[in-house]
Length: 76
Image 1 (cartoon, rainbow, N blue to C red):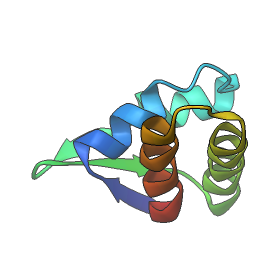
Image 2: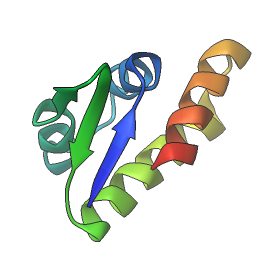
Image 3: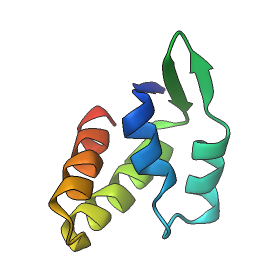
């Protein structure tokens, strides 16, 4: 499966400090395609990544950062 993220959504994803090694591989294996960033993995891989993002959204104090993370979560 492949998910396309805007540069801002991808930046929110890259800033997550609590990614496990498998999630980090998804992020750093991404490709730039036509102004978007494609993140590819299995359904389980992307579900795991979405779970990490959801945890970050729940714990984030900054409304601005929380909104960016939520937009990223919605795409995945």
